[in-house]
Amino acid sequence: MSQRSLQQQQGHYRYDPTQLSQAAPARIFPHAGEDGALRYVLTELRHNLLKQGQLSPPLTWALEQIESSDHQLTETWLKLTTLLVDFKIFQSDLFNFNLPPDEQFNAEFVQLRRQMGEALNAADKKVKTLNLGEVAQVQRLQFYQTLEEHGRSRPKIIKIHDREGGLSDREFARQRLSGPNPTSIKRVCDRENLSDWQSDRVCALSNGETIGLDTAADQNRLFLLDYPFLKFSPVELQTGRYVGSPKTLFYRSEQGLEPLLIQLELGGKIHAPTSDADDWMRSKLFVQVADITQHELLTHLCYTHLSMEAFAISTPRRLPANHPVYRLLKPHFRFLLAINTRGNAILLGEGAAIDSLMAPTREASIAVMNRAYRDRSFESYALPTDLKHRGVESEFLSDYPYRDDAQLLWDAIHRYVTAYLQRYYLDDLTVQQDTNLQSWAAELGAPLNTRSQTEFAQAPDWVSPEIAAEVGLSIADLPNYPRVPGFPSHRNPGTIVTLQQLIDAATQIIFTCSAQHAAVNFSQFDYFGYPPNAPLAAYTKPDASASLDEMLPKPAQDLAQIELTFALSGILWSRLGSDDVIQFVDQGDRAVLHQFQADLRTIETEIQTRNRMRDRDTGIDYPYLLPSQIPNSINI
Image (cartoon, rainbow, N blue to C red):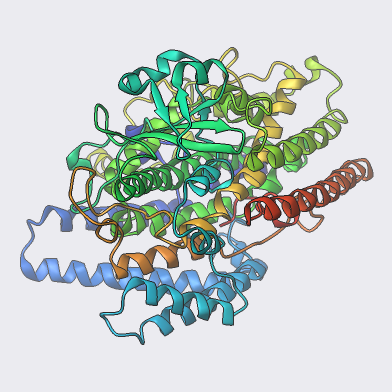
């Protein structure tokens, strides 16, 4: 790619300035070209006029009709361009109104999406033949049976619930280590973490064994699960729905991890396995609600999809296509911008999944994601750093499927990245002298107030400053925070100083876009596709006298959760390390890739062996980090 074409790339990939006021993760401006900016301005003005509600009824009606027609036209155009996406002309600026060239889904992906949609629509249609009064359990059974008729599987967790009569203590604990949100539990390393449990310094397990908390902590047997970002005020919750910020203590016995105490609200009642059976089950379900909320908003959406978007934008903006780091990373961003842009409507839009199914309001959910993103440094995402920070190394938890399988993949990716980059960088000095690489690092890690406003989308010159400000395209002053907190490190933000630092950063990016996303995405339907295991919201509060059924979603919301989680994990496109998506030309690069592929085949065999043992011991395996089940990029 020439310098001129690199400048053209910077025109295609522009950052969305509307994210600045919220300190949000960097997002692409999804309106390509100057005509895209103009369409955005006109659309936002129309939205604003309708929201103000000060127009005459005829004009309001006219604008609403335009709004409806515009939405239908957009959906029709999206279907057409995705169906014809493999024709080169449909990747050009002439037909691409939303994303940069070559960022649209291709025909192969669209075909997989169509197959998933056919199964989903068939199941949905079958359920709709039931009487409106049918209970959620009947709906679920019909839905799962129809999926199986289309070659799909029902959620794995159903087998465990059927075997153990619901959410058992053992299963509740196991999901902390191999469920969809396996990165929240941490070891109690300091007695100060026990301050909330002062009245229960001695407690009992479900088998009656007495446990002293201080002694258990000293023996590294206590583990804490909490959700510090989920402290919502009443006005930040949807009417009739609830999620709290519970804390749970677990004890590592000789049989494995067991729940010990649950506190649902700060200063509130402490529940234990010896409590009333219904109270204890409700307590576990309130924790499950918090867990799925944190998973969807943070672990999945924020820490994979959104955290990687800045890299997907800056890489083509700052690195020529023949640059070694571009060639290494770009395949791992395939369709990321497309799925994130599409996901805005499915998850984050008004009336979308967050609004209709989850407990926090849309505004509160977005605010939590923004705070969580700014609170976490780039280095903290690294698997070894995260495991050490949480104190969950193998000497403290022997059985931790996510950790053990993820470590195999992290090590393999690290070896691959090291071998590749050492072909192009001889030492630290060659890294420091790579001007394109340093420009890339600065765009990501330097404070925004040191950057140019031209990196953001601009309103057309003829648009007045007042209108530009109204639609969010006017930038007064850029903030002093970076696009990616602490990139590549807090010590040298915006500058890559050593070859090892570059290797670690690239390893982390590839791991997040492949293995980490696979672990937290493709487990969703198996665990969240059965709402009694983990409902997206509670429909009673902890202090209410209500049955378990009253706490769970009504049939309509129950079905919507099943449909959503199936759609979010129902497409598997590409494969980590595949020649189909990593198309190295240089023979030396191809040799490095082939060694990576050999490592992945070895890992596949090892995890398959582990899964046979897991299935024997617990009745359920952990398939989400099998290399054959890991896409090369975040594309769903």
